[in-house]
Structure formats: C-alpha cells, structure tokens
Amino acid sequence: MKVTILGSGSAYGCPMIFNNWRKLNPNHPKNIRNRASIYMEIEGKKFVVDCGPEFRLQINQNNITGLNAVLITHSHYDHVAGVPELSRASSILNHSIEVWASDETQSELKLEYPFLFNGEEYEGNGLRWRVCPNVGEFEACGVKFQTFQVPHHRWHCSAFRHQDFAYVTDWEEIPAEGLPILQGVKTLLIECNNGLYPEKNGHSDLENVKKIAEIIKPKRVILTHLSARVDYEETLAALPKNFELAYDGMCFEV
Ligand SMILES: [Zn+2]
Ligand SMILES: [Zn+2]
Image (tube, rainbow, N blue to C red; front, side, top):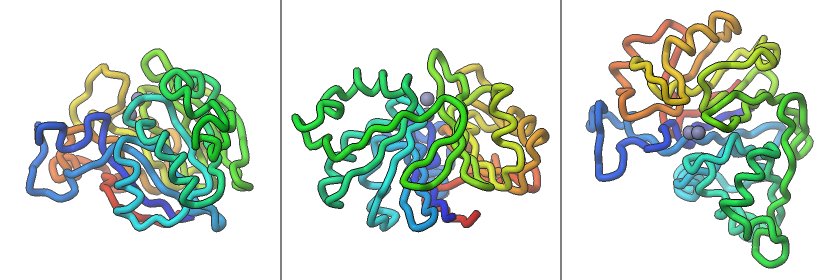
C-alpha cells in the first residue's frame, strides 16, 4: 500500500489563521501544515481518511485523480469540514463514494450536515453511508480494515489498521481493546499534537507516543496532527531513532 500525508497539522492548521506561527520557524517549508488527513492506495482502490477544510486543495495539490471510499475518524471540524465536498467529488467521478463512520460520528454528522443524509433531495445521493464498527473488522470496497475507538473529549475517535499500517489520531490514551489491534503494526502514524509540550487538551505528546511505541514496537513511528507549538527542526532533534515527523506531501510505502 501507498500512503500520502495530505495534512499533518492540528485543528488550527500551521500557520494558524492571521499568519500566526506561534513557535514555528516561518522559513521552514515543513512547518506549513494543512489539517490532518491521509490518502491511501490499497489493491488498486483509493481511500482518504478524513476530509477537513482544505480537502479540495489537498486532493489537487497531490494530483489525486480518484476516490472510492472515505473513512471518517470523528466529527470535529478539522476532520469533516470537507465532507460536503464529497457529493461534488462523486458527481465529477460519476460514481458513488463509500463513507465509513461510526454510529456516534454519523449522529453528529447528521446534525452538522442533514442535507447529506436526505438522499435524492441533494447531490449527496452519491454518498453511500456505511456504519464503521466501534471495534473489530470491516471491509470497504473489498479492502479489509480493523478499527477501534479512542476516547476524545466527550466523543470517540476511530483508529484504523490495514495490514502493517495503522493510523491513530486525536487520542490521549489507547484503551485495552486497541492494543491487540495495534500489535504487529510496522508503520504507526500517530497524532502527537502537543509534541514536546504536554498539555491536558484531549491530545497527545511525545512522551505518550513513546509509551505506546514501547508496547507495540513498530519499526517506524510517524508523528502527525502537529500544532503550531511543534516546530519541525526543534522536535526532530528530540526524537528517538525510529521516530519521524510527518509533513504535507510525504509519501511512503508500507
Ligand atoms: Zn483533530
Ligand atoms: Zn478532534
């Protein structure tokens, strides 16, 4: 499988609005980050995880020309602001797009975007809503995934694994049922919103990620969903050997 990081930034994006760079070096190109999202090509099928506010731009910047299914982690703005764009994407592609989200996330999305669930009353009829289990396996467009949920504020965020790769975002702790699903993962792409500066804000930091990596022992740990306090060079210098920082446009094979 091939993975492209469409966005490595936190909910605020980097720089934040009004060109606020906070602790970031504005001259380093890897400090420019769209909201967190990834693109995956697996067995000829094209997947995106999360559609934030820069969704259309991210698809175009990375020359992505098709989409079969979208996996949604949770209903926060930085992960779903681009979901209505999917109806237009489907009409341009001239085929439907599967959209996978947990029951809880779909309930929230129905409040945010009722018009996307009204079938023929809107172009949203190109979206095929699918309920992602809270924990266990599911098959999207014939491709097998495993999933579990992490607590995130008063909601839950779905994490996804396909073969040797897993993506965990917007987490503070991994619940017991998540650990067996992550065991054996070789490449772990994981939220590290707070980097070197721990904070109780429903997100993670380097120390949290290190603890999980000690249990799972992936070959490669890639940190993403990085806030404007996570300067690329400063953070990179403090990382263990098998850790890397994601950046927008980064591609890797698993
Ligand atoms: Zn987020
Ligand atoms: Zn969130």
